[in-house]
Image 1 (cartoon, helix red, strand yellow):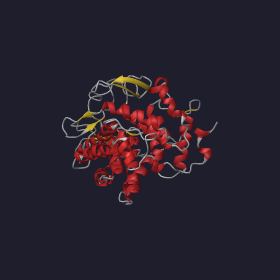
Image 2 (cartoon, helix red, strand yellow; image 1 turned 90 degrees about the vertical axis):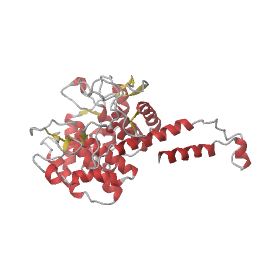
Image 3 (cartoon, one colour; image 1 turned 120 degrees about the vertical axis):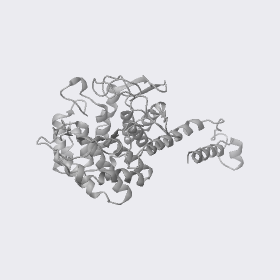
Image 4 (cartoon, helix red, strand yellow; image 1 turned 30 degrees about the vertical axis):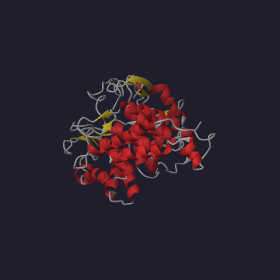
Length: 398
């Protein structure tokens, strides 16, 4: 497949790199309007971009196991619910519905035994066999529901209706009296604190607009909104980490008529340049937070897609070019490359250090978001139009 793609690209540029004289002979253009291409001008750039898109898809496809699950990175025995939801979205965008079905079917067969058991919800983490699950996280389950909703839309087949229904019921059950959603449950059954990112994602994942959604907006306005900067906030109790990058991209994707200024405000808060550990190239992108000690490549890809939603294509292309400096070839799979979690080693959101190898091995989340941004596939689009009353859109109020 990769060889055929290369041959097609080379043939294309061979045909269209003819001289002005050649064009004039067949009556196309004239010397005032047609500029001949220099030998190989533009070919290498386009070829590299197409190759990276293909290589990154190969990497995601190749890390899928026979049970449908994908490891978050090669040979880690670590499986993330969120990462697998992203992979399902990538397969849906690519038209590889059977590969998406393998992921969704894994969870569909565990609706009764896992999703509806104990405190409810699917485990956030497990091993590659699908066992040894750990804690239930709202955001990850919301992303799985987004993937299911997108599958039903793309396939026209509501085969995972029960899975979607039970996910929605569990997500709704997490709503507190103040309108916020608990973040899930720890392994010992204690509730996880309310997380802005997970709440916003759940708002999109649960179809329609009813009291559940209205109460979420009331909570966000009262507890997680900066009216001066018109942006969502993450950690009100810790002013140093009040802001988080993902809220800027997710807010833009989830909420109708969200102020576009908040997306550009992220440049002021988070943008930084770092040396990529593996490639040694200087890369410019966004950090998780105001520490600006690493580039969070997954979040940078999220921002690239968010700018595309605003039709700021130059900004999107610039970020994609920066991301493409960080590709790492697989050491175990042929014709497969991916993007690491971060460009270099440092801290994650907050002061805690990143795990070892976060900057030197391809990561499923970063690579998936790169492909979503590259192809312009918006996972939030299916749940975006909710007919929210203008009076409930606190972000447009003066």
